[in-house]
Image (cartoon, rainbow, N blue to C red; front, side, top):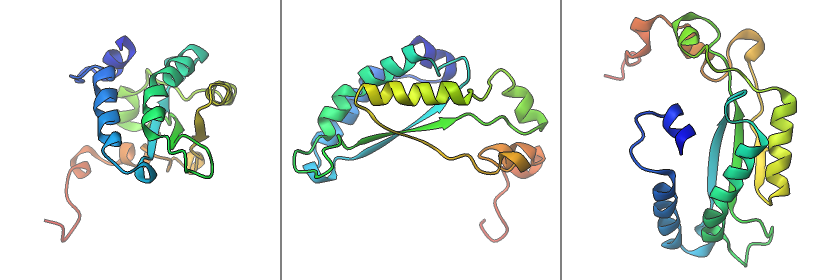
Length: 157
């Protein structure tokens, strides 16, 4: 919870309260519709360690139980964790603001994924595309002039 407070200072609810609400919402669905994708951004040296992988696996246990469908042929829980390695901003003001974060190493990404799998979590790593020409997720936005970022596209007003 303290790491979450540091990363998301505007967060109001405790993670456990969010999890309880999510489990209640999932329980209201028919078993075959109880599926969830959890997007987890890996920040190098911040939340990419084995201890954080263990915490995430433990945090997700009640959610996995809420999503479990004994009729599911794959026997998976219905919860997929999609690991998203952090991309730097690619330059500009946004990159300077986010300079305190780094992309995790591939060794750290692999170890995090392996630890989650050891804990029985269904996990994937988002494929990185476009980083070599600064067009990966978040990089194009960071390179736009500030004035253009919040203007609607032509004809969208």
